Length: 158
Image (cartoon, rainbow, N blue to C red; front, side):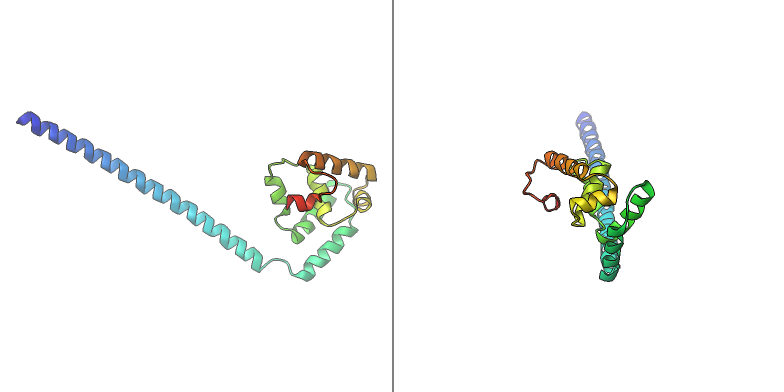
């Protein structure tokens, strides 16, 4: 009889330990889920704040006019260009960076200029390269994206 009581006691003890470990595991899972939800809530708050306090239409028009006038020849020019561009299209560059296509710096620059609906000549003039260079960049991008000449690159990416 003593052996049976000892065995029952050991089984009860083992079950108790298992239950305690399971409850701790569940608690940790709930804490992690809560943390993720709080992070998502903060991201939503930030996004809403950006939407509410984003640039006005007037600022956007002014930024676009300034961008088109720029000559982009050195890194400082690109930094100014990027800052003004992000006023117009806040998430465009982040989307390109996170893309599955792994765009190079020059491809991102080309796509940013293309997003402004600039023609090949305008892009070449702004960047200080030949029209052929711009066309080659466009050709390589189309090849990378596996799209034909009739498909607009920006529309495809969006």
